[in-house]
Length: 182
Image (cartoon, rainbow, N blue to C red; front, side, top):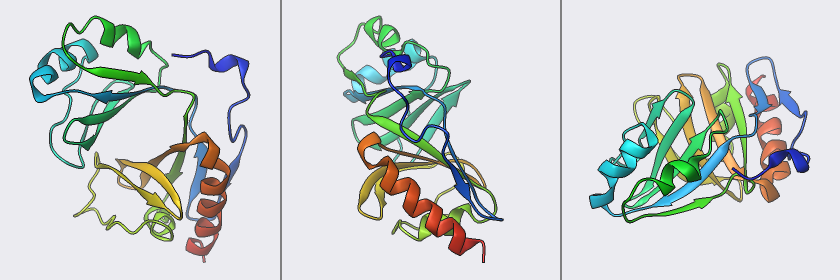
């Protein structure tokens, strides 16, 4: 993971929400954009210590590490403990492309009973539990920004966005949270 200690994190110290929604910034994490053919997934799963998902809109987790399916040969791998994901990939011994995007992304945690309503203010996707259950992940939009949305719990979502859009996404989430609280 790139050294995040030398740069002030985007959204550092920002909190938001309402009576029914809490917005917090997630701590710095290691993130890798992974591309690989199906034949490489067994070796990559072994190297990561989790099963790389192959079903659309799903994820897999092991400890602090998650792999989110984004496309037929594309995943976002996140390690909340900040482990060196690139070292894990370098020992995989199989065809793949792994790019460290730790500095590019910022995560906002949207939690509470109004979390789903808050996200629906800017996301066109059906986020009901039947359509987007716990563990679901998807690349989508929030307002005018591309995000990766990950449902971690029934009433908690992780919103991954590019740091350059983080003020916009956080501000829009905060306005939506205030509306959801009424």
